Image (tube, rainbow over all chains, first blue to last red):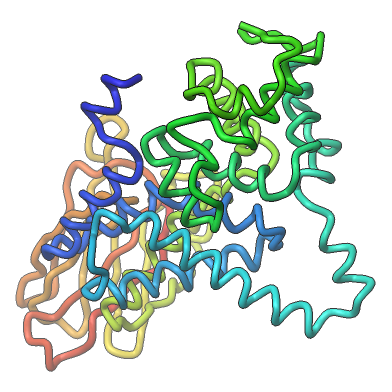
Length: 196
Length: 168
């Protein structure tokens, strides 16, 4: 894994490299960047409990903002962090707007998270999946958000991503940090859990 | 690998290990399963970025009787002719087989003028020139979603025109 990271770079470093090419005039590099980073941005915004349609709008706004600010971003290598911060801000902005428009009962209903309501509707593939899911659901929300986002990146990226998510230094990487430790501890105390 | 009884504070200060990597990759798979990225979202995002960047005019697909089945349908490869219309231009493309699993696209732009025609298939882009009669062709093309951007050689003639994505 270390070798693979050294050869291909991490998600953040590959994104930085593609974004630099875009800034150097290769306009088609933007399409590559969108394909590369849309999954992690999708999960970043969905972790904020935004519905799918609004999440798509948020991502569109975020990407257009990147195109318009492309020249003013001081360090192209930090493009992933820039996008995560921009997407989260835009998601907050949209949610504040929705909270004003939507009656309280409905707003309350919308607060049911993907974490709590979706597993019932999805057939998980095996015992380990359902065990993992049940323990993730027990984590505090900020921990679920952190793990959900970093799960889509590579290990050397974790500290910077945690920072972009507004988590304190040391939340994850190079040490395990509290959130992942909590999950590992509760998994290891569960007799049904066996790492393959 | 399991460590029953070890309190979370000790685990928190230990370095990330292979078991963490496994748990996190399972977690990514799980989130992909319960809350997948909509399958055409990347394409739609790329589309709005390109449209925005080009300040382009968006053409509309004119459904011809024989082309109805082809537009973003599940049943592909029966396409013959598609026409895209916008304020400045009409672009017509004819699709024909070009060897096994490959196709050839012959196109016409009206009013006829020299132009650069770019075909986008995901992140893949190919460029050809339309001649003074407005004719252009792409050979050896893979099936899939594609869109076309037509840019006039003389920028004063018309703004870039972009078609919606069609299954070819």
